Image (cartoon, rainbow, N blue to C red; front, top):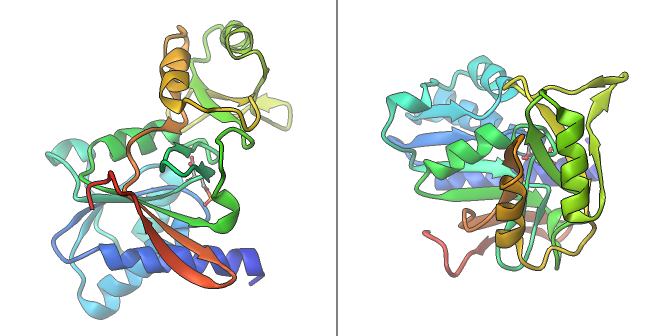
Length: 233
Ligand code: 5RP
């Protein structure tokens, strides 16, 4: 395992401290939270942890099933106690950019239903100003090129549909995904989110504002938990 992978593992596993028996847990998507899912599976098998999980993607659903986490439909619960998820960037106000793994719509629905959100990350995700990663935006396949060009004019930056082998990548919801290369310039992520959501054809945007309560952060010097002073934990 290389150093970057080791940091993901440390952060992903450490976040499991937030999970107690009886909890209803949102399970995020990505290569960091993968280690959370694996560790929760281990605790269920070896320590008698009792939880139910709601996955945010087919990939997480498959992994959680493999490791024995009982899964339920979000609609069968009133709400969730906690969601643990990865991020592509977080800023000093705990605002996030997510969607690098194209799961942002389900991730946001699950986060919205959760009493708390814990993010797992390594130090490369910590930024002063959001935007270097780009903003992932889920859009309808209908007239996706028109929506992309409207977004490009609105944001005054390059916006490109994500592709693989020349084909549009489709999300688990059957939508397209575009990335807005806005640069590290998002000083007001709340108004940027609202502006993007106002474009017809946009299904959801990967700006997660006022949702994150804590970041479990791994770096070469170890793991620490940054608590959002305005958060719920
Ligand atoms: C998926 C996401 C991921 O949580 C985000 O991309 C971080 O992933 P990783 O831990 O693999 O860097 O938002 O839509």
